[in-house]
Amino acid sequence: MKHKTVIAAVCFALALILAGAVLIYTKKRNTTDSSEAFKTEFFTMDTVCGITLYGNSDLSEYRALIERLDKELDSHDEGSSIYKFNQSGSGELSKNAAELYDKSKTLFEQYGNVDVTYGGLIARWGITSDSPRVPSDEEIAAELEKAGFDKLEQNGSKLHSASGASLDFGATAKGYALDKVYEELKENGESCAVVTLGSSTLLYGKKPDGKPFKTGVKDPFSPDRLLLTFESGEAFVSTSGGYERFFEAGGKRYIHILDLKTGRPSESDLASVTVICDSGIKSDFLSTAIFIGGREGLTKYLDDSSIQIIAVDNEGEIIYSQSLGGKITMNGG
Image (tube, rainbow, N blue to C red; front, side):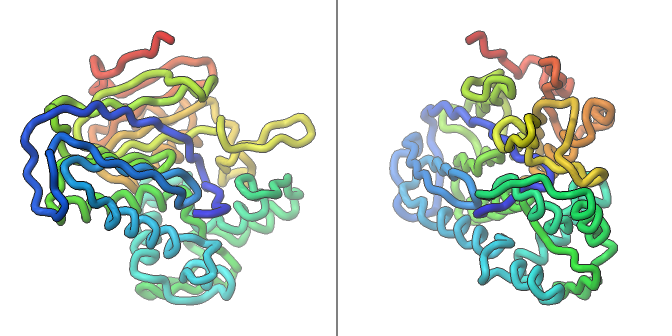
């Protein structure tokens, strides 16, 4: 999603997939040795997308799906219903955009911290654009006044905003796209795939060798190396942090993760947050929401059996869900 700022963090998790060999059954065309991996990589949704598919050489369907969603959910694409709504303040969202809006709203009502109606504030900062800047206090206050789900009137897929609120799905679109890819993989009878959209990854099915997936989490203090790897079965994984997307002005670093309470980049005492669960949009949303909430809010997430988290605070301490005990390996390098 080009020039899209994430309301609250998108950072990058590295998936390390170790291949093996057992029989995989698939009904799709172009099938081959079930242990053989076929890969493609391309730029979409403002990040590098990687697709690895086992036992099927035809990856075009999944690439096309992601690229269609990129255009449909991009608030900067003039052909998207989101762009048109942002320009006029009224309009009917496309099917996927409307579903994404509803799911983002539901997650906000449950967890808070990430609100997709703050597109105007994101645009003011422009942190992931070619011309980021520090907006004035007056500009920030004006955008905060416009935003909020309560400022939008909704009738099915039709939205109206008298306040001038605008939409930006940077914190949820990648996860939503992976949910759609998951549905397609399942419908097509695929047995194993790994799809990575920058900070969010889908680990689908079972590896040919029957072993768990291994996923790497970057060291937020040295992003060119892995801090640790963890094992899991089928899951969605998203990581958020402020160590890769930022700009500096007046000797201060401004990360792309915005705190909606202040209208300014988050000053969280967490350096990165990784969320593992059974929903792409939920993992994407929560990695951002938990990051913004900081260490103070970690306890309730550590006790939530529907997710697993790995958090690194600004002192380098690693905090993780009890259910991950024995599944994490620290990188000694």
